[in-house]
Amino acid sequence: MVTSSIPQTRVWFITGTSSGLGRALAETVLEKGEAVVLTARNPQKVEDLVAKFPDRALAVQLDVTKPKEIQDAVKQAIDYFGHIDVLVNNAGCKIVGLIEELSNSEVHRQFDTNFFGVLETLRAVVPYMRKQRKGHILNISSMASFMAEPGGGFYIASKLALEGLSGTLHYELQPFGIKVIIVEPGNFLTNFPVSSICVNDTQIEEQEYKAFINDRRNEVLKPGMKRNRLDEPGDPKKAALAIIKIVDSEEPLVRLALGSDAIKTINYGLDYIKRDLDAWKELSFSTDCDEVVASK
Image 1 (cartoon, rainbow, N blue to C red):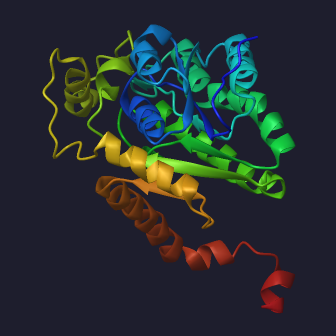
Image 2: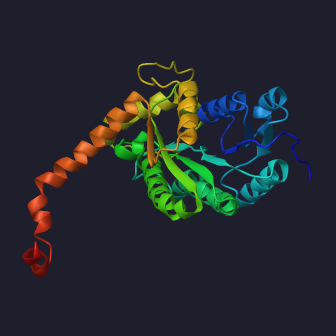
Image 3: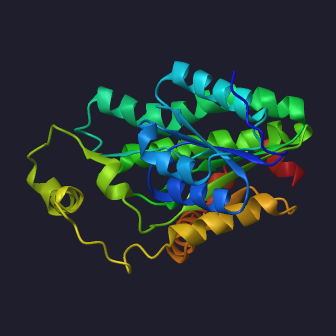
């Protein structure tokens, strides 16, 4: 067993650190003098960070769809650093396709990464945090949880499932001093659309669908697609600093939106829900038992 010789410091376990927000967060945490377990399906992609911060960075192979690799990665982290203080479930992917056309195998692939991968990682790390009686868990969701996007239904469903799980976990782990935070990023200038979005193989040739889904497919698949900072206004480095600030804060928090577009999208989604809630309030009340109505 190889152990780190660094003094006691906060240890972050971050999934999906080879690119995007995960990479930006890992690098920023290391620059601030803390330790990071850099997990990636291809750990060679983070070896530069290990070389730069040899005493505080540990690269570990991890495909979150493989439970055995999750167990092994967490064990390596504990053996090396002795503890895990912050877990960031960042690894994710997006499969684009209509609800009607996506195969069950593609749907399982979506949930295996975005939901069950998180679940297995939680089950591996939480027992150590409970023994410590402290810790932070940040589950990376999306502003997409508050929107409906043609072609993105199962991605949104996977993030909604993650939000439901995280909200409950927030309360279940409070007695152990563990804070659970749902992070809802907007669009950030990373390579997520290039490296983590897949388009299903089967396509329905229905004219009514083509009007809005073909443009989406072309956007995803177009080689060398030029990124527009107005479409994706978020700075990954600033997002990393915001996440670190939240972990440092003593203020209670369940959700953290990242980006002006996230605030706009989430507010729109909440207003949309409230509109129907208010419009049909009397009909909703009418389903109460007579005894309940009489007691009001």
